[in-house]
Image 1: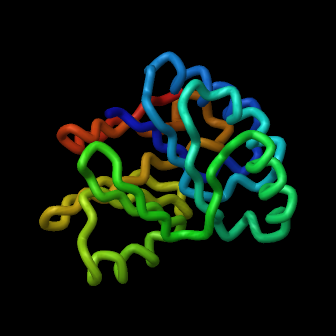
Image 2: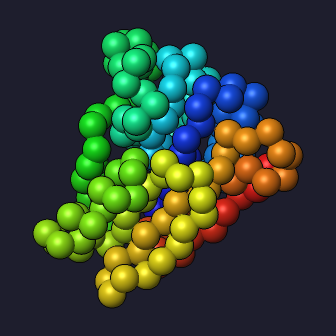
Amino acid sequence: MRIGVVSDTHNHLGNVARIVELLNAAEIDRVVHTGDITQAKTLEVLARLDAPLHAVYGNNDVGERENLERAASRYGISLVDPPLHLHWAEQQLCVVHDPRDFEPVLETGAPSLILHGHDHRFHLEQRERTTIFNPGECAGHMKGRNAIGVVDLDDLSCERLFF
């Protein structure tokens, strides 16, 4: 199973449309958004994904929470407070927004994969049996420097797709 990883879209709708194109072309099975969606319009664009979307709220989603909830419900998107625990392809995943929030998760049960966002920085780390991944910036204005991630849950390999 291959999953797409998106973080901190911050309502940059042009980039979000490109993300949808890239993930649909990559034929991924599911998509995870690690927070800071920012506005319901972003969910409208993400609803064009060919794969189900699972997302967590980020710190910049606070003021738009009600609108985001309505849009998520309308488009069948799973949007919850972090941490989000998932069990896919025999792997335990944990999704948080802020990287400071995964330390307690590591102390309580070490999932196979932790996905995070918040700092807009690429992060790929192996801590014992846990892979930690943030594909980095995807809401920037510098063409070719924006990135989303693809994780193969068979071997927990992580790659970045730049646009």
